[in-house]
Image (cartoon, rainbow, N blue to C red):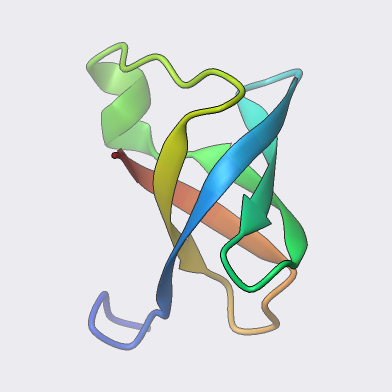
Length: 70
């Protein structure tokens, strides 16, 4: 699946979990589990509860990858 096919949404980090995973509340009210993208780990970009983030959703829509902090 290419980057253009992945659905991008925005949300707010609700809770930080171990291993750079987060609970994120999407703008549509759905809460998902998201992990930090590799480039964000590589450049030590910190994500904390309360931050607004951009997420690429998985095809099933239950999980996502945080690709940008807004």
